[in-house]
Amino acid sequence: MTSDLLILGIGELATNRPGAADLVGVVRDAAVAIRSGRVAWFGPQAEVPRELLDLPELFAEGRAAVPGFVDAHTHLVFAGDRADEFARRLRGETYEDILASGGGIHATVRATREATLETLVETGAQRANRMLRQGTTTVEVKSGYGLDTETEVRMLQAAREIGDKTAIDVVPTFMGAHVVPIGADRDEYVSLVVDEMLPACAPLAVACDVFCDEGAFTVGEARRVLEAGLEHGLRPRLHADQLARTGAARLAAELGAASADHLDHVTPEDAAALRDSGTVAVLLPGASLSLRSAQAPGRMIWDAGVTVALATDCNPGTSYIESMPLIVAIACLEMGLTPEEAVWAATRGGALALGDSDKGWVGEGAVGDVVLLDAPSYLHLAYRPGSDLVWRVVKAGEIVPLMR
Image 1 (cartoon, rainbow, N blue to C red):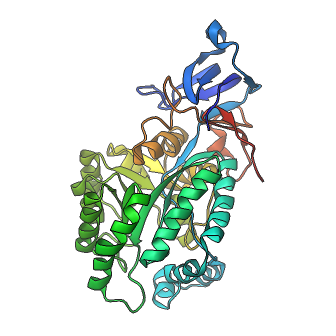
Image 2: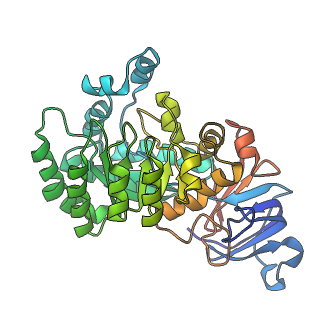
Image 3: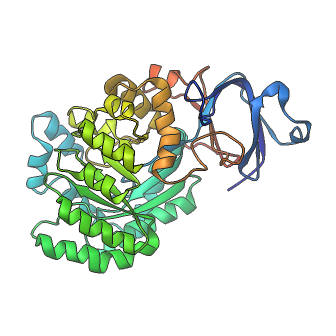
């Protein structure tokens, strides 16, 4: 899906160009030219090159524009819902108690195992289209609600079909090591993940993730799975230190993981290790909000020099959030990021977490993913949480029909 387009009349364009003094690289009274799905030129509208004036035009009429949001951590493919568990948590039960009683991830596993590929694609595509409607142009999608080889393969097949069926770009991640199934032997299950699931799932994925935390997998188990994933060409990602400090962030740094995600309990020393390894910190403020737990120390992580991304963690249990604009607002209001930092982290940071240097910014050669806001500035994303601010979404130069 690529096209040619000249976007004119942008009142404020956030480019995320490298080295910008204001971080987001604002250009005012701007235009963006896209050829064959890639940005061919950007800058002040008065300076549009003459040879680009024959492109199809879109008039922003003074609206602000930002790069397409890159949601670098989701569990988009699943069946069923856990609204009842959400209510139970509000009444005082803990997530760990619900998980131990057979709920939590286990409940979604049961529903997902029973779902057909067609059902997973249909429901996942509906969520993807709602994300697209809110400006997300690239989304990472994990497996992990199968916990058996057949269902894990089916989830990754569904993720790929969602990418084919919708205008959103899908980045599939294998996560067979989500939790140990009820009644399973831990060592035998880890061996199943390494010896059977990975060979079957690796051709359908680009990364391998493990939930390394209290009540999930240990650092040693996570290391075994991620090193096996590397042998299959899958770059490591890690659910790290969400529920307790377990050493998962240090493991991510040691392995040179693409990202360490959650990080609610990391220390300054952990942050320094992530910075030095080049591992991106993917922060998930929606999950902490839903669980009513303390947010990850986003301010500390950013100030430590770690590359930061924001993501929804869209999942049926602990963050059923599909809106990146809402995540930007929560990160500012609850995590201490500035509007500039949050917008950068939700766009460029997410792209870097996925290893995609062509996305999350507006510059010559970048993918032509641009979101036009029904607002005069990107500042309104944090200023107006919950507002429907997305006016148009441009995906690789194509104006996307937005479904409601």
